[in-house]
Amino acid sequence: MKCSQCGGVDFETPAEHSALEIWTCEGCGSEMAVHCHYLPDISGFPKQDWFAGKFLVGGRANAAKSYLKLKRLLNGCERFDPSRLEKQFLSGALEWDLGLFPDFEVERLTSESTATGIQIEFDKVPE
Ligand SMILES: [Zn+2]
Image 1: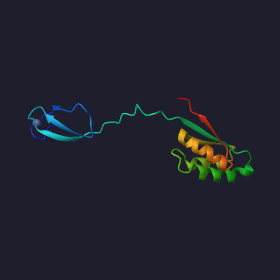
Image 2: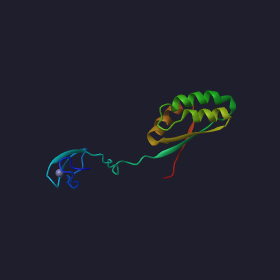
Image 3: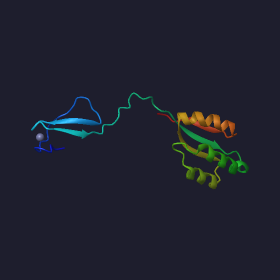
Image 4: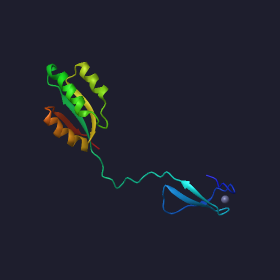
């Protein structure tokens, strides 16, 4: 960052950070508007818990039906990867790793999965 007037590189900057700051050149005193990209301070936010989702198929006969139900149920989840689920379904595995889910999704999925007769097991990921 250089002063557009005198080419100086020393500036007086505001004590409080903001997205748009007025910097004053120490060489010639001209003021410039500077767009700043500070990382937001997220230390005050509650930490999110993550859970690993697992589904036990419980027999090849139910696999296709369960697969379709799961796909619909998990659609829209942040980390859900449908192609990964499909691979496990096609491979004939009887235990499907569904990936990771944040706590608020687990809450929703637990109630919805009970309603659709799908039992997903969630294990809290150790921090
Ligand atoms: Zn200057």
